[in-house]
Length: 147
Image 1: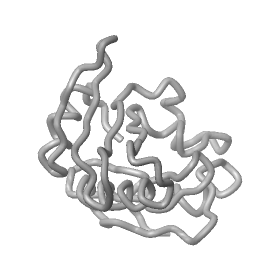
Image 2: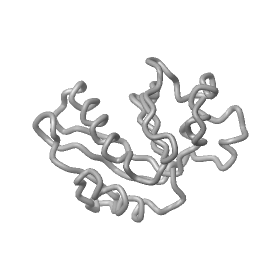
Image 3: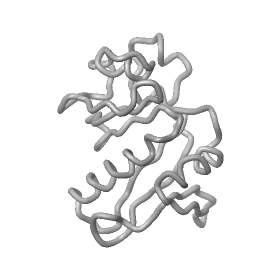
């Protein structure tokens, strides 16, 4: 969660996790590194989130996706889904040292953890949704005040 450009955000995040910054063939901003838990690479594209909405704090119909102006979808070239999730968790832990609010979401439907500079990393209960139906569970952590 930042108002910085993806380029500036990449410069903040990359050193925390040993990520290389590259430009794709169509100008995409790609962050990646060798995987730590299996063969292949882990990383993805850092993009502006077109779902971001400025009223996410006060509009009860907003989802967690509306709160983040920037998104980083993690991919793993090794193909193993369990390793991909484990790599994403490792990466999230490393990136949580950034002075930013971060959320780790699996397969769009499950909020795993939130990191806030004031509260640190908070694991969410199993099955927590990033959608408005469970907004009361995650909103306080995005705002930096534990629920």
